[in-house]
Amino acid sequence: MNPGADANDDLLMLAWVGGDVAAFEILYARHRGPLYRFLMRQLRNQALADEFFQDVWQRVIAARAGWKPDAAFSTWLFRIAHNRLNDHWRAAKHRPTAPEDGDERAARVPDSTTPERELSEFEQRRRLQLAMEELPEEQREVLVLRLEQELSLEEIGAITGVGRETVKSRLRYAMDKLRQRLNE
Image (cartoon, rainbow, N blue to C red):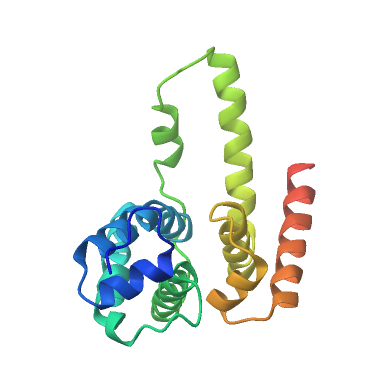
């Protein structure tokens, strides 16, 4: 079996389980960006995100022989990441605060338009980021998975271990809280 770059994830995973290293390389290239962005959003710490990113892929590699196409590969991958994050939060007993130099780092972003426009866009993004940080962990997680990873409600439910209706409810509450916070 030699699936190409246009093959679906399940075929690639089956090929990799069968020993096709190129299939893994395609899977990795396809999912590394979304996985890393998800981890950065949840951890808000580059060093931790790097560590977790490596750890999740190591777990994927270690578990490949037992993988069954019961769920989409992306669902399985994000479920591993979700479980790793849960382990971390249980051990840490808190969510980390935003970096102290976050505003300074953001201010160093190159100016592609007028300073006034850039400042306005930055302020809007920052307000949204702060509002998202105020959301309960469960609501923020489903919101990030839905908006950034563009996963279905069923996929999010499989990742987080809750039902479709619970995912819908968490999304609705998250969006209501964001609207309320941003309209203040």
